[in-house]
Length: 276
Image: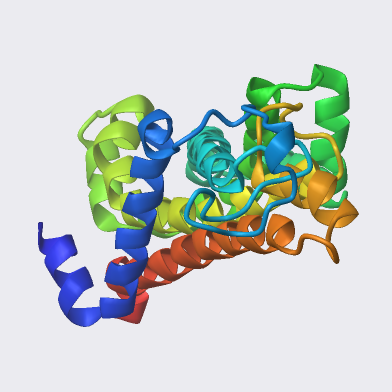
């Protein structure tokens, strides 16, 4: 509650971004009730209709309601963004904590593996993983989660290195506490804030990468709509004749990424002790 109060009072723009994020999550969860039509419901009598009362965002070349498809697209973006970020934080936290806490040879080996992974362009690695795993929502989540775990581990390792040097860690070791107890009772609670900040800033990036791979044709296969896929398929083909097919998915993507980035910046300012 204190964090929420500080967010509203000290970071009002961050609070607005948080409200937008909450709205997007609610829309994604209740898409079946929010959308007036099914995402693949066609009507050849209503092809490429401009925005109107009957179809707020217009229709596509098959007469499908664009508003409904944008709403269902929020399901894909929110699911991928939150699930892939959670997976990357879980893997990155494990790698970063172990590397930073034990140090020495183990830290050297793990960090060279991280360097080797980061030497390749992130988008290329995601596409390679998707080619190996095949298309599908689960594959997209796993590919993005694995690819982002290594950058996350760098941030968490840095926080672990700072906590490791504190006197209470040495006191706990001197008292006979095992490494597992020290990690769970002392190290992990003191790096929760950096983990939250890192996760909140990465969600928007993951959503943007998902849109990019869907635009390239490696994302969730049709007919399930994703914002990047809508921009690639009908958006490019009918950009001049029916610009609403590109405008509304693009605005939804922009709003989601903007909201998560602003919320992440606000949480960083509130939770990072170096910025207080």
